[in-house]
Image (cartoon, rainbow, N blue to C red; front, top):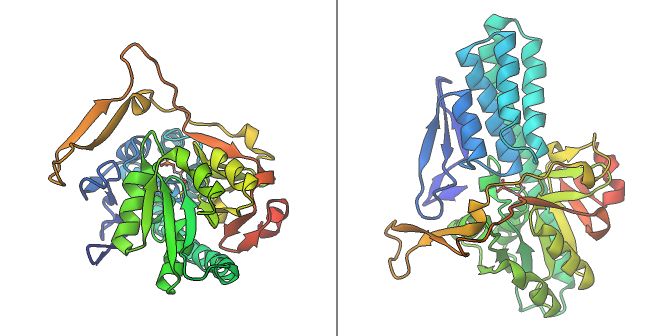
Length: 362
Ligand code: MRU
């Protein structure tokens, strides 16, 4: 994707495979900064502090974390230790454990002296696969949008898509999942407009999705998290597309906290609700969503909010303010589970599946 006319991915290795660079997502949209990640420990830190975030991206980041580990020490013990550290960095998105598991399996089967080489090559393959999967999701999602757009009764109004959190290119290596069909529709000349839920507490919608869409010139409007249901009742939402951190075998969709409420409202207003997910996000080992570990993040994320000081323009003067009484405590579950019965379809790189037919993409 382009940032100020330059093509970027969210993560890339140094040409000599000595370190990795990532876009620091804790700084967006206030500043565009690249950080250098030089060890497996630093990669685990980048994931847990959400410098890199989004299910597919943390999978790729963890794969590169394993490659960094093999620069440090190619022994069996260190391989196991690095895998444990990286898997523990965030619990909910299955892509992370999936990518680390894939690296471990390949590296265990590789002689110690070749592990470093193999690790960097496999991490790069996982990154390329992610891009290809997201591009394919974009094309399948584009067909859904085109069909719905053609059926739209009033042709001169935009096709309104509501999304939550950030499942754009920032959450992947490139293209995104939920936003990939939207970029494809916009590029194909369809009149799409995106309602972007701000996604408290960390504001991935207002900070990251809005920034991405603006970079690409896609018309969009940021709304409070509570506005989605109202807009749906008013006939102002034609489709909901979200990403996911884990989809279970029965089609339950675990995604950023607040997704469930949007799915309920969409169901009540008869609006199609899609989750766009590459197949590494599907956890075939779990039969339903209640078995997923939901990350509980620091309460400080709820009690504080970060932003530009009013009237300061974009001069980088960031402020953090408290938004609740000092005496109050806060809870911060980061994800929720939308039951399969509320999900119209799951858009994967292999096609679009009703939740009850998800096994067909195995
Ligand atoms: O806590 P985050 O920002 O990592 O959560 C991200 C999401 O919930 C995304 O919707 C999900 O990972 C899908 S990303 C393609």
